[in-house]
Length: 543
Picture 1 (cartoon, helix red, strand yellow):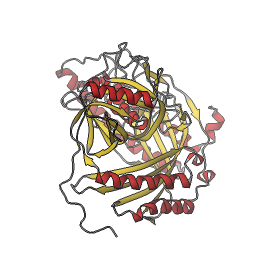
Picture 2: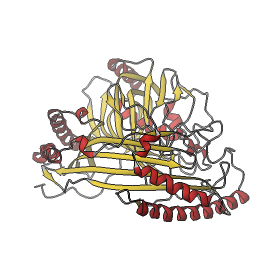
Picture 3: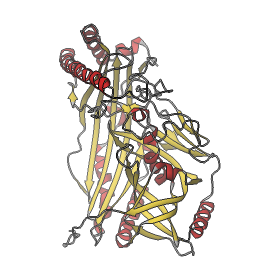
Picture 4: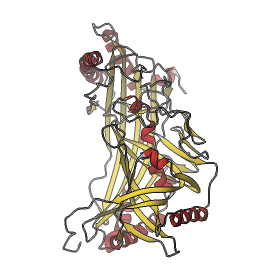
């Protein structure tokens, strides 16, 4: 993919390389020498179109910005300034560093020079703190170094002009006004937003190990959200979300309008639904909900850099080679996939944010834990990156998830899963079991000082009665638990697959991810009542 001729056609990367090499030539021979420097840049062009109840909210003109991040490391691969400070933690640098939009060498070089100089001084100061901390604290359990030694690559994709996408702002303004107008007649809908984000990003990466990368990313994200407040003060949000790499993959207007009308009706029904009590027993999760479930309870616990921290619970670190799921279930992370079963994926890329090619990783194969997601922070027995070092441009890289795929060798039909669910509920003397139909996300704690638990936030939940009564919509349910306990209760998967395309927030910022899963049957889950406001709902009817 790379040729020297191709790179010479992109003046900007030459400017980056020139300034990188000039600065490194000095820093590597300083009293506290730098052994590695990288420049990461994102040229971003973004359209944001917003509408509410049939009206535009603000100007839809595109926003263009060029932001950068610099990594300077002093010490060596075994111990450097990025090492964890025991008992104190390591702050994640946040800086909104902007470059001029045109390729003016003098202006770009001055900004890079000034920021590199400060990054080096900060790295030296931090390295002194690291050495002092190592001298007075107990030895680390994990004896691996601080930075991997990985092969370097040169990779070039030609720039894509924004005009090639023929993005028609006025057409999208009309569409979003039409989508959001659907909710105007439903007085239960207290707030509403329809938004379309089209993003074209050109990513650059150069470092002192010889990596030179220019990659394009682009996507359409359509999100429609509504909310209401129940009489008891509980906030009830619902949403529709569509993701596409090609605009042709977005649903038709007719399909979106149909979905929006159904969402409106569902919100009114949810407002009248009864509040669920705390529960323990069997449950089904639809495909989309199961994807979020695996992302929260499992995905964050196989991120390699996290497993190196002495403060982390390291739930799965010593379980390589052990059975952690039923033998028919496998979990793969693959950033190379653009689609899975014709579903577009949000967590795709060629190179991660450390300049390492994204790789397919079979973390769980036939129920057995085989591997972890790795960035350039090594852990024992995993000395190399597999291309999962990721971060928003404002943050330092850490190990993060990409496209998570849950597969099964023994899928069950919907009827079989419901029969298993009802039988288990009867055996436990439960009047009903739960079906989690839609979730909005969740959060998890992986540290040792707080309970090593998770909380998944369901939006649409049904009671499935064992006596055959119709399913009942309920509200106010939070799914809670601890990972090893609930993993031991995962029993079977369905034949259908669904995808959750969203953003994952963690210490390196919000990054795009995908979770693909079949419907999931779990023999035992636990729920608690959702927190709610004590404020009364609006007295006046919405105009």
